[in-house]
Length: 182
Image (cartoon, rainbow, N blue to C red; front, side):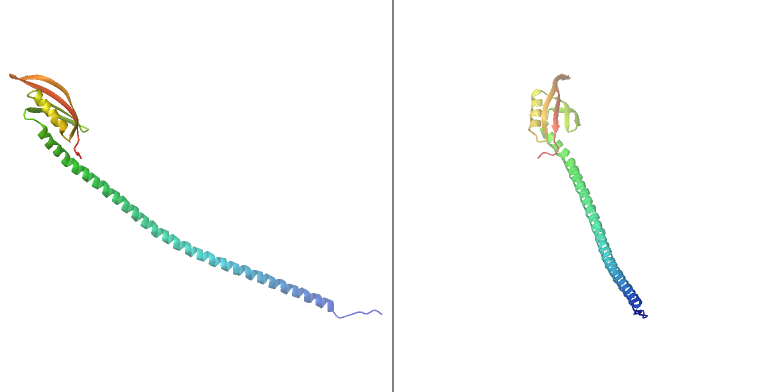
C-alpha cells in the first residue's frame, strides 16, 4: 500500500528555513551596517578632533608668526640704531679729527715758513710753500715725520726763489694724514 502524506510538512519546513535564512541575512546585514555606521561615526569624531587640533595649531602658528615679525622688526630697528650710532661716532671723529690734526700741524710749522697751498684728496695731502732756507724746511719735514697725524712725509721738490733781495726756498711736500691716530 502506498502511503500519501497530505500534510504540507516539507513545504512548511522549507518555508520556515527560507524565513530563518532571510532573518539571519537581515540580521547579518543589520550588524554589518551597524558596524559600518559605528566605524563611520568613530572616524568622523577622529576627523573632528583632528580639525580642532589643526585649528589650535594654526592659531599657535599665527601667534608665533606675529611674535617672529615683532622680533624681526626689533632686529631691524636695532640694526638701524647701531648704524646710526656708527654714523654719529664717525661724524664725531670727523668733527674733532681734522681740528686736532690742524692744531698739531700748527705746532710742526716753524716760524720762517709760509704756506702757499694745501690740497687734500683721499687723506693724501700736498703742501706747497716758501721757507727762509733749507734748514727751516728740513726742521719742518722732521716735525711732520715726528707727528702721529702724518705719515709717508716726502719732500718732492725744492727750488731757489728770489723775493726782492732775499733768497728763499720754494718747496712741495706730499704726505698721508691720519685724523684719528691711536
